[in-house]
Length: 148
Length: 98
Image 1 (tube, rainbow over the protein chains, first blue to last red):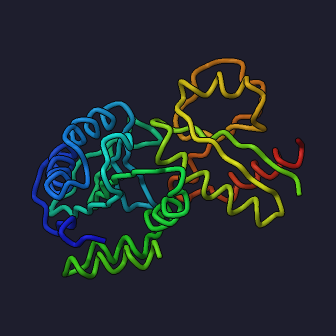
Image 2 (image 1 turned 135 degrees about the vertical axis):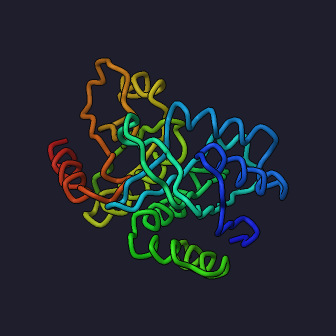
């Protein structure tokens, strides 16, 4: 887990803003290729990725592996929640406090990792710890432990 | 060991379908099944389903209307964790009826 891909006090007013901020971190460190951000935004507009996990809402924007150099995950915690549409019911708008931007390289060979990430997104207790964490390192630690 | 072939469908045929596939493999292998999964987009699902290679479909993006010829199971519960037990119950029921 690259702590430089974690932002704990993001101040943007839209889901698009979060994707751009986190996407730039990933592009800057060449985890993803040029065009990744646009591809994520385009996908999010058609196939949104907001999830309501028992009252705590997260979003897991992502796109095709063709835009990815190296698998990575960026985390953005918002000062004020931003709107994401619900993956399950795209008409519904969710107030999202934590965004996990995913760069997936080989989904077939990363099934185990993705399954563990999914379990993390569904763990309300861990999500609350991420919401409250004072330091990036704490968030990195939670994620590393979850995907071990 | 009975082998099961599952077609896991999501929006881009990559991320959430792989997550669901991972969960299915874990749950069904606990029950003694050999599971193989293929991930696909909704637009590819009908052709793949009609190829006869799959026992059933799970989906986290709406399937395009058509005659799939095999059971289709909504896997939204896998995304939130809520209702997951019911989802796996339905999967098991489907698997046992094959």
